[in-house]
Length: 67
Image (cartoon, rainbow, N blue to C red):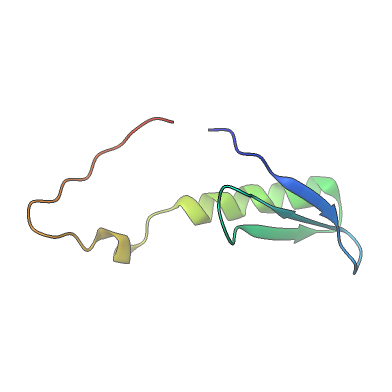
């Protein structure tokens, strides 16, 4: 999966990154390398299912799709 990430200089120094396609998925880092590593982790956590996501109604199905 490929996602667009926006990198911006931070007012406090370093960089901020966010993913326009994933509202609220943001991260910070002191260098471009660090912020890219941090935003990758933030994306993985953002997309990871949590127990609340699994509260299914009777007859519901879980399916996987490739994007």
